[in-house]
Image (tube, rainbow, N blue to C red; front, top):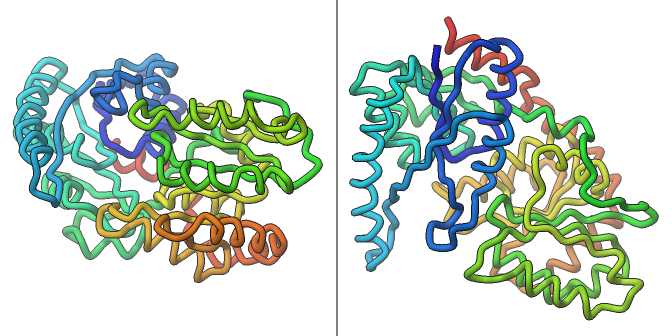
Length: 366
């Protein structure tokens, strides 16, 4: 049996892949995704690196998505959509999977469409509380729709929907690899913008880095987008710091799946975007966060996730248009009252489903 896995939400996909390997070791898997995070940069994506490490065949797919602003980019993306559907037809024709498991986004849409046309059973997982347009369309073609939030049910055919929760990668629980050694004597901040990094977050950190390092150890994942060269700029700033501050700043373009448990283990406070995967992993690990929602996330999903965290008393919200000084004040306030935030995770425990990956596998193999 052959399963084609595709979609834009990598972490839950990795969680399910690991569970399939464990429970159904004879199943063959192929993965369709982006080889390059940004095509023009030709920087290999995190999903490509992680999937190749698992010895799963990776098929690169170039496609486009509709933006909401009419511009040259809009029309170029429109043309790429046709290219994506054309290429997806041949991917399905050549590989003939027995079923397709989608983890959403515009990248999965053409694969799902041709899977439906070829009468291949399609299953999809919706990670967010407020699905984007691509995932709503994917839901029309899917045999079953797995959701992480009960609130997402209203966007789909209720007869197809199964509340499974969000699959959590087991790698966050067990330290496998230490990308560096930190002797923890003061609070540790983990700053991340996701696999691509966040230029906006990085700009704020550049302005307050020295202040942060006077009180904290800082682990900072910048991403590797060549357009902004944030990693290189921050490395240069680090090299100009006094030795006592320099030794408290740990900089990386990416953290891989086998490294992330160590990072989470050390961290007292996480400063990050509020994507669904980060949201659920922090709930499981009971890690307070300063969430910086991506302003243009589909359906304002990141804003909703951040509001749930803040309302429960597990975190605070910072908007990227606000001042860097305000971000510094929020961080200082949270570290000062970190026990308060940690104790409030009992308010979110009902959102975590321990066996989400097992539930999904059970349904697709019925």
